[in-house]
Amino acid sequence: MGSAGLIIVIHQVFFQGMFFTKNISLRRRLGVPIRGKNREAVLSAGFIGLFILLSIAFGFMDEPIATVPVLPGSASLAIALALLVVSVLLGAASLVGLRDSWRVGVPEDQHTELVEEGIYRFSRNPYFVSYLIMFAGYTLLLQNVILLILWPIGFALVHSMVLKEEKHLAALHGERYLRYKKRVPRYIFV
Image (cartoon, rainbow, N blue to C red; front, side, top):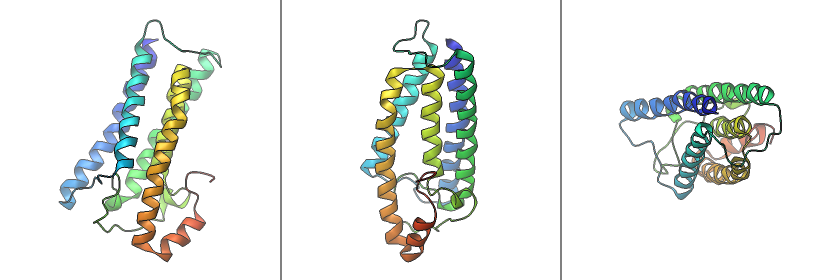
């Protein structure tokens, strides 16, 4: 089972590596903090960290706990790997697409440009979608009931952060954001 843990660690090196590289380079280039200090962002980040750490721990266990094989190992592995690749590609497209408008949480004192092109023509929150796909990939890779139970909690926390961001963007960009909101789904199809 250690190979599952290794897959998760490798995925995290790419996924979080992109995230931290973007945050550090943007912070240096703009000279202002790019992290908002709102409750929703703190709770979501804490949960995401917990989910990742649990996934790594479960992946390295010799005797995994709470596993329920739903698919044969090879099918589960193939689908999980595909999901993890999609999460990295979607995350990368999101980080690149937002350019200097990238923020973590909602720094309410900053004005950012509204990005409507690239991946943002298809989803208003593709980076959050990449996290949700990552949750699904880890859950399927490990076929773990605990992660399956945690997945909807993660979605609820991410959703609360998205709602906070939407309120901020509507106040910041007014009618332009409301038109964008009507035209482009929040996640993928909804």
